[in-house]
Image (cartoon, rainbow, N blue to C red; front, side):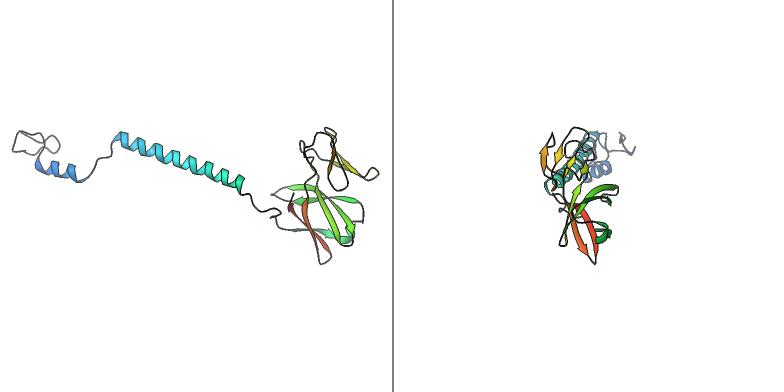
Length: 173
C-alpha cells in the first residue's frame, strides 16, 4: 500500500508511512478553527487595549495648566481694572482669553467660551459682567456664574508675569 501523503510504500496496511507519521507527531498543524480563534482573541485584545487607554486618559488627565506658557505682551498692554481680549494658541488652535490686570502685579485670565454651549461671551465694562449672546448666561467680574443656563463659571487660565511680560497658559479650572 502507498502513503496518502508522500506516495512511498508503507510496508503495512495503513495509509501513512512511518516517516509521515513521525513528522505529523513532531509539529502541530494550525487548523482553520485554531487560526480563527487566535485571530479573534488578538483583535479583541487590541480593541480592549484601546478602550483601556481611553478610560485611563479620562481617569488620569494631563495635569492642569500643563500647556506651555506663551508671551501675550508687555504688562503695559493690559490697563488696570479692564479686561482685554487676547489670542492664545492652546491645543494647536487660536482661542480667545480675557485678561485683566488687577493691579499690584496680579492678573486674571478667563476663557471666552460660555460654559453652557461654548458661545463666545462678551465683557461689558459698564455692567461689570460677562454676557453670553446665545442663551443669556451671565458671569461676574471674576468669571463666576450669576444667571442663565450655564452650569458653572468661566474657566480660568494659568497666568504669570515674567520680565515685564504677561505669560498665558492652559485652563486650570
